[in-house]
Amino acid sequence: MAQSEARETATTETVPLPVEMAVQERRFNLRKLLVVIVLYLAAFWTLVPMYWVAISSIKSLRDLAHIPPRFFPTDPRLDAWVTIFERRILENVYNSLVVATLATIICLVISVPAAYAATRMRLPFKFVAIVVGLMGLVALLPPIASAIPLFLLGSDLGIIDEKYTLIILYTVLNTAFAVWVLRGTFMDVPMDVEEAALMDGDTRFGAVRRILLPLIFPSLFSIAILLFIFNWNEYIIALYFVNSMKTMTLPIAIQAQIPQHELDWGVVSAAGTIAVFPVLVAAFTLQRFLVRGLTFGVASGQ
Amino acid sequence: MTVQQTVSPLPGQGATSANSVTTQPPPPQGMWSELFSFRDNRLGVLLIVPSLLALILVQFYPIVYNFWLILTSEKGEWIGLANLSRLTRDTIFHGALIFSLKMGIVVVPMCLLVGLGLALLVHSDYAGRKAIWISILIIPLMVSEIVAGMMWKIMYHPTLGLVNVPLAAVGLEPIIWLVKADTAFIALCVVEIWRISPLAFLLLYAGLNQVPRDIYEAAAVDGATRWRAFWDMTLPYIRPMFAIATILVFVWSTRTIGTIAATTQGGPGRATWNLSWYIYGMSFQRLKPHYASAAVLVMLLMTYIAGTIFVRYLWVERRSR
Image (cartoon, rainbow over all chains, first blue to last red; front, side):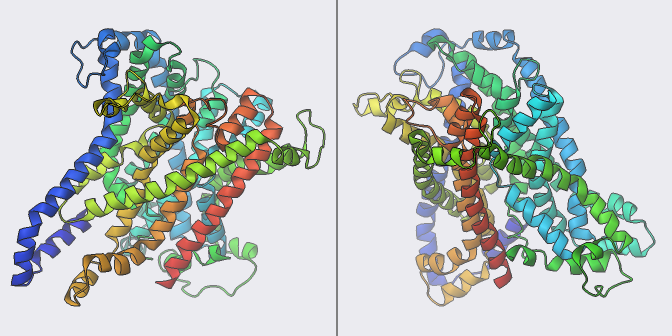
């Protein structure tokens, strides 16, 4: 963001010609108004399904049945929330939290060294190129393509419907993506400081711990949140590997709540609201990083 | 071998930092002997190996296993290419493939258009507080497929939903969106556009940030119109990001399964089966994993083609700059 702020100040400093300025003055407000109106419409379009689900979860039955539907609940009730907690949604939340957190941590533990080696160590570049290229391609593969073989393997080993299976699978499914994004992050950090530390007789590990890690920490944190959200949302693998309440993660629980009869809509809305909450937090935490970090190296000007 | 050119700046970087003593690259030998010739290399390989193992376990092993699955029947007997030839005659599969492609044809251009439009707006000087706009606009990207589908199922609901309210306001009959094949297709496309266009927005916005400002000033001096400047300068600059966005949007829209599971369950009839849903249905509900693997192969081929274009665009563009 610092970049864009610098750019903004730069543009305000360029003084337009007097004639131009007059034209800009006149047209400025209309243009700005149009841009802002369209952006508000876009924000409305983005947020309205979420708003709708959130208010559906607190509408009374009478409001739910009201035609046309009410934009604001007249008689807010928490019945749906009580029901969803009675249906032990907290166990699903707990499962999701455990699986997503552990998978995120393990994934970082194996992908940070790989990204470090790929960018900072003197490996034959053919080797690095092949590894990195493969990881890039693999990050594109649809998860459903590996689901069947992994499911059959899991059945043979008897590890279906276990939390640790989900943790292992989520870890490895995200590894390629994590290495790719981390590699871009590492490439953005200049090597000079680290080099200086090495010259001063610091060990390599010391240089990484004292210099590199603090520098990349904000990006690392963002990547961790991103991976957490991926795991929190993961659906396809869970569809194959979850059989019981013991392992049921939130997305599968929500699918199970989608009602067969009409009166249950409040309940599924409440479950959906729970699932979306971390996403809202993450979106606001991640936006800086996403604009810079997810450019797949194109933006790093290499 | 475009991949090989990818990391050409890297060994140079590595050389300066890691081994400041040996600045000259060693004489070219075989890759593997070179790989283990330095202490440094051995450590490097050791650091990469866990990720590589992960990759082999969940990505390459399944792909190889897939081929074995395709070539055998559900009972494990060798049947050669029978699964594949059966697939070519399977009208349900044809329907699913066509549905996926049809969806791609509608969703990809719409997402790119919406994404480009929003990226330009947020990038313009008129949008204050860019951070907040970006945060809001990328939210759908981080909503789970199944939750997105569930939300829109409520939105499309004939009485609970919001979608029919404007229709009723202008006096139209309410549409029961998810019950008829053609309206269900439109409805699903809208869900996908809602879900995926933020990805195009994000990538294109990042691309726009890379365009140097001074070229516009130069163009303004030369008397170029805004439109001309956009067409001749902005677009060529963001072309690589545009290519990436196109491919990722395509891949995302064809692999969706949660939105279908939450909204139509493939119905009415089999009108909204896409490839992923077909694979899931065949393997998990009808318990024919071997046969479903043949459909996985088709999906992999689609991704492979998209991925090849991805790598080529990405690296060729980068080198030519």
